[in-house]
Amino acid sequence: QFATPFKDENGEIIGIVEDFRDISDRKKMEEALKESEQKFRMINSAAYDAIIMMDNEGKISYWNKAAEKMFGYKAEEIIGKHLHYTLAPKSFHEAYDKGFSRFKDTGEGTAVGKTLELTAIKKDGTEFPIELSLSSVKIKDKWCAIGIVRDITDRKKAEESLKKYQMKIQQQNIKLKRLDKIKSDFLNVTSHELRTPMSAIKGYVQMILKETLGEITEEQKKALHVVLRNINRLDNLIQDILDISRLESGTMKFIPEETDVKKMVEEVVETMKTHAKEKNITINVEIHGDLPHLVIDRQRIKQVIINIINNAIKFSPYNSVVNVRVKRQQNNVLFEIQDFGKGIPKDKQKKVFDTFYQVDSGLDRKHGGAGLGLAICRGIVLSHGGEIWVESKPLQGSTFKFTLPLQPVQDLESKFREVDIFGLKEREEEDKEEKENDLRKRTYI
Picture 1 (spheres, helix red, strand yellow):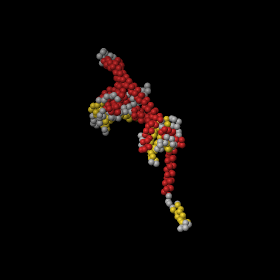
Picture 2 (tube, helix red, strand yellow; picture 1 turned 90 degrees about the vertical axis):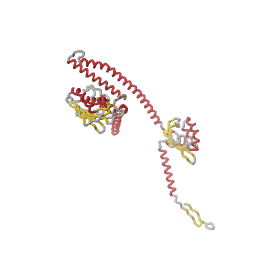
Picture 3 (cartoon, rainbow, N blue to C red; picture 1 turned 180 degrees about the vertical axis):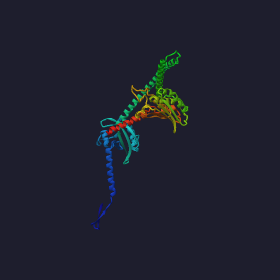
Picture 4 (cartoon, rainbow, N blue to C red; picture 1 turned 45 degrees about the horizontal axis):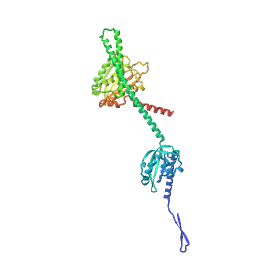
């Protein structure tokens, strides 16, 4: 509102002229500006990172609370001081001097628009690592800089700890690989050294049984058959140990060939009938429909079927039945071996494929074996691109199943090196899930 006196010819005031202006918009702008400034100050005060402004002379013109806490300087004692000479180590001063004149003229520099990791100095002279994000702004036609500074001391310590940990892991891996090679070499040499005398013993036992070296009594024959059976058992154990070693080292060899699945299964069952007769067990074979020929390592897949049937006989009661079923199923051939033994508890069904795992563990267990057979089966089946599992109920028996794809794996040995032969990743996931569940329970309690 403006008032102006209105005079006559003699200079006498005869009235007043008032001028009114609507300044609502200006007031709104002033209020908005105040609100914006308040927000800016609140954000700066609450910010975890230091916010620092440098003027065109390289001096500090703004310093928030986080900067006070980080560097140890109060705003009133640092504002007006030269930023680089106060907060940067001497080793950085020369580079700063070279680049600052360019920044003054253009607002450009090697650090502008980037996030860098640098070293800064606190008020007490302590050097510490920071992360700096620098931007240039023009104020009153002069280039200034705004820096967002983060103290990364804890992060650097964590990174250093991680590096040390990774170094330890690398050293442990080298050590483990060395030990693994020693173990593999030991197994190969030991297996060879065991097999050589065993072959001679087996040969002589067979000669004696055939009475090539003279007549023997029935009692002697029975004793020699026990010897021969245990030689074969030891020979199988040595072969299993070698196979496990090859699986672990990724050196197992595969020879794929076109295979008549029906004929292969019938051959295996025929060879297992003698063993089944010892417990008066009948092996039934059910082959559903016409089975296609598969390109597989015939001997290795026969090894899988023999191993599973052998287990079925081992864990079946006398005078029982083992069923072998084979059928085509979509893009696979499904193999099933069913027994009517005591079954496997649900919590142990995945573990039966682990190396050295025994369902009936302990020194008083009734059944022999080293717990290697099913681990080997798993490795062979997975290498062929198939799957293997068991379905079982206590006191109702078990059915071991595995699939082989109709489409052959192009390179069995490459596939073998890719797959998680022993289910280690699966075990890691299960362990992780178990720990998380345990943590949830504790948190709830």
